[in-house]
Image 1 (spheres, one colour):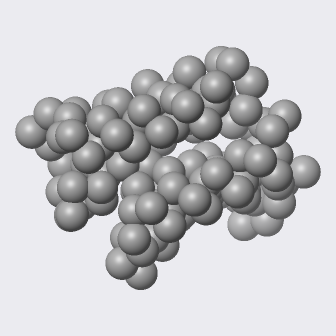
Image 2: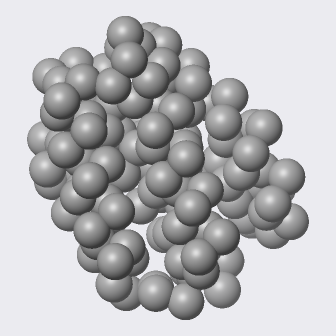
Image 3: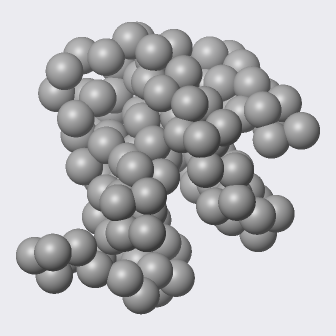
Length: 130
């Protein structure tokens, strides 16, 4: 179960990276916003920890940082999230989906408001969720 949750959270990190990077670069304000949202919104909801005692919600940051450090194309990062979404659909109840969309919009607004590219990714996410 922990491995599944780690995969889901890392997938969310890839999703949030795809939004931040969709306009060609990841602004420091977007990274800071993500880290703040993980601490304020996601960690309080996740009681489980990994084998070294880290809150599983930190895997959002790990996925984001992995995609960013590797220079992953935003579309590839979104596709990776899509794979996780389809592999573990029960992890994405309506409340979680709502929180994912809210987090996505907050990241998009963190640097000079939402760009057209970021809006497109958010629309694609909402379409994925149905």
